[in-house]
Image (tube, rainbow, N blue to C red; front, side):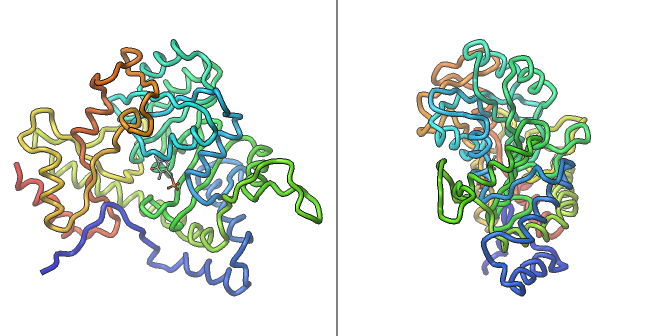
Length: 383
Ligand SMILES: *Cc1c(COP(=O)(O)O)cnc(C)c1O
């Protein structure tokens, strides 16, 4: 009776057992904690994968922790403004408040669903000196990096890339996460590769990455006793989880290929349904297609809710698009900019429109062709 559960995105360990081999190695050498070979190697191997200096990646307990440390490294503090994509998961913005700074949210554009450069310009007109710009690559689709970077450089403000969802996605052949002063990745359970939980901070500043490694291990000064001159954090990744990460990294290219197949399968299946389009991306980019997301036309006869309910009835998981941060009660009172300037309350925005009309479709790499047929059949049956 129970129909097979189909997930949005769930952990997918390698068929080869790479992860277990690295974890076993840690067990065999009794190097369960704290640090050890797997942590160092995971940092080096990830840095190599994204094409940066192998000293410039720090493995942390979460992507959120990486974002927190990026902002701390930039000196973000009380009284500072930080610009941030509105259409994202709350973890992009929460660390701004951990540092007692104030987020100002920026609307999305329709070509990638990421930060609109025009809206960013408008925000600079009102707040000329933000401490940083946090840019998200939503669902693995790279943002308009050239335009955004040009604006940041013009105003001499550092860019932090939230590449939590976009590990392996490229823009002009270069990896997302490596364009800004800092980049963060996540290995949370639903991401394209996972360590069950974890994150990575990357930068071109080796000294600052070393400083972050110090902060995230409780800021212990070099002394025989425990000596502290700075506030520390317990944000380091464990040697066991880093072992899982090393194994997962070996199958990242395969996962990207599988996710791309899923996206193209949906795109193909829905090409004759006028009411459906898939999240678009720029020609000079290669998304990792972490999640395949559909958008229903404004006057579509089928609503997103009807699609989500029809799939849920068949034990198939979906999600609405992220609810924009400027609409979240917790960020009530924060400023928000669209391409037309500072937005007043209740005004419709691109990010809100995408929230209203989007549906995240099952994008699990363990889906079989039969699973895909089932999902697509149910959706097509509604039109
Ligand atoms: C998952 C995610 C994060 C947070 O990563 P964690 O590892 O879960 O802390 C941050 N930003 C975005 C856009 C995410 O999707």
